[in-house]
Amino acid sequence: MKNPENSIIFTPAKIGPIELRNRTIRSAAFENMCFGNNPSPMLFDYHTSVARGGIGMTTVAYASVNRSGLSFENQLWMRPEIVGELRKLTDAIHAEGAKASIQLGHCGNMSHKRTAGRTPVSASSGFNLYSPTFVHGMTEDEIHEVARDFGNAVRLAIDAGFDCVEIHAGHGYLISQFLSPYTNKRRDKWGGSLDNRMNFMRLCMDEVMRAAQGKIAVVAKTNMRDGFKGGNDLEQGIVIAQELEKLGMDALVLSGGFVSKAPMYVMRGEMPITTMTGYMNCWWLKWGVRAFGRFMIKNEPYKDLYFLDDALEVRRNVKLPLIYVGGCVSREGIEKVLNSGFEAVQMARALVNEPDFVNRLRQGEERCGCDHVNYCIARMYTLEMACHKHRTDIPPCMQREIESIKSRSKK
Image (tube, rainbow, N blue to C red; front, side):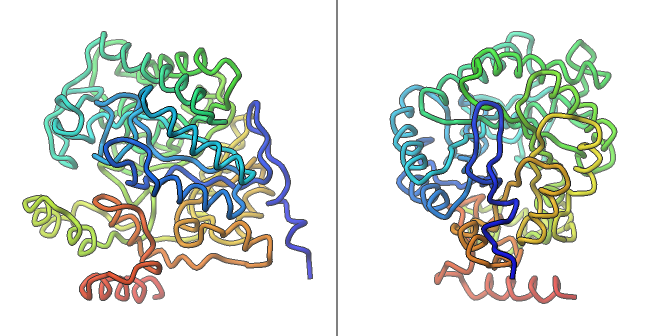
């Protein structure tokens, strides 16, 4: 039998100025563990457990670059007063032999006034049904201010001891809202042609790179496709990836989907509506999603490595290191990706299910125990991220939904 430790998975990976002990990265999946927009003991325990579990680098998910970029109450908001606690987290991750990354972003139109402290902003004015909320198209001054906030957030990440920042330019967040013709209806230099729609991304990345100064690895998460008619397709996704390469990114994370339009294109599988609404606190939103959620949230069939075909096309068109994400749940699949020219793989649900999945792979495990019923995703909109297999308090109605989704996925 082949020695599992000889796998390509456990060879070092180079991303900009840093080297990872192996080619696995915990992807930036939202934890909902930052109460009061601050790091918490729960966040500390989870990421240190993943580091202890053998990961090459773990990514703290969605830290907003300013208050207006918060999409949920329990998200990080980068500001000087949390740097000390973040330093404790990065020190603990480093003590376990892993590198520490943090995802920096701005949610744009996916917020509320009570969370963002103002009317949510986007590339263009309008109404976002996902939130739901009215949205304010950004002025020239606001565009430059947010770009500067990206740079300031990178400086804070360096002070907090992070090895890498992941700039969120996908999934329908603010940079992605400027990139996509679905959300960008502007007629000035920030809208219209794809070249113009990339101007905000260029501005933000220029601030990011000037702040990084080679002291920290800079990775961008970008959409290969928006995942619906009227959004960017693979042809535009490749042009955006090529532009990010020109802007000096150390690597790209290749993803797809729009949280406000095609959320399951990002994650795949079925959204457990009963579970999602069961944990919601807002009564009118709870009943609205129960009534219309199945029409608004289109299911996307899950399969292992679901983004690989598109990612290989991007691989043929850029030269910088690429990080693959999407359905990496088995040794065979991860090795297939790495042997196809990718520097590393990112995983989320596998590490929610088994924080020590990488160590288990090293010991000979072939596949993680995640069954992709997406309970963790439905739950994280209200409570902290968790796998249903680790909970003993799931109500019977949610348990029945989980079993029903399992049954349908096997057909």
